[in-house]
Amino acid sequence: MVNVGAVFRHGAVVERPAPRTARALHAHLLALAEHGFDAAPRPIRLTADGREQLTFIPGDVALPPFPHWAMTETALRSVGSLLRRLHDASAAIAVDACAEWPRSLADPEGGTMLCHNDVCPENVVFRDGRAAALIDFDLAAPGRAVWDVAMTARYWVPMLDPTSAAYLHPAGLDAPTRLRILADGYGLSPQERAELPGVVEQATAACRAFVADRVAEGDPVYTKALSERGGWQRWDRIQEWLGTHRDVFTAALSS
Image 1 (cartoon, rainbow, N blue to C red):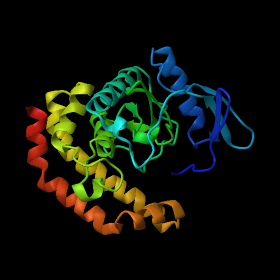
Image 2: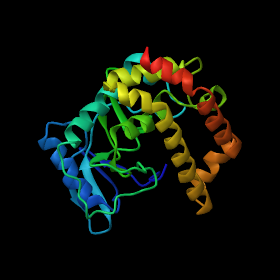
Image 3: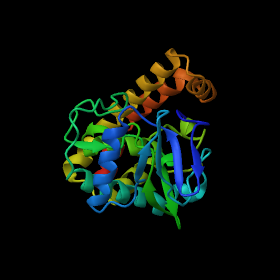
Image 4: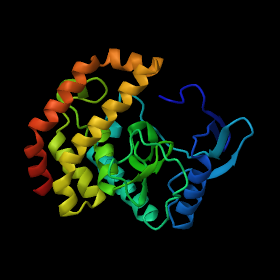
């Protein structure tokens, strides 16, 4: 949504606007590859006009409204597994403390590992029905693993009331079961499973604030999306639904 119309592919190279943290982020992406994580773009160079060039990753990316193939249980489990691979590699890489990592969707508690923070369907590349790679690390920032899982759950379960989910997702998705499948695919610990429902609520509040800031700045893309998807009443409904179903999610995660 942020870079709409500004990303281009030239054969094996993708050129796009460079984030403020591009230099630190490129170093991190190279370090991920050195630690065996081959499921992210590799940086090529920064251009003089403020853009970056990355390697193109072939595969399929789900765009809204999200197709059934992207919402299967196999796909969901593979997203959790891919995120765990990212975190295992990232945990071994020191975070650049001098970089001004974006805080808009970052874990408010911080952390020593660089999280992706935006593992939405549009940022996951699939092959043969399974998540194969992650793209768009623009919102990466230090945080806890459980925060990144919670952010991912918001998009992939999705952690939305049925009315809100119907805007972009197939009907009939069982949120408690799918939350457990994502946690299983990731290999979430018992302690993190107990924390996850509450962290999802935190992450939802952070996402609402992110949208509010964009709308206040007059961003036409976010303003249009807010209007088309039910306005602030939708956010009120989502947050109420999450709180009402917290015990249901906790039980599903421990079953």
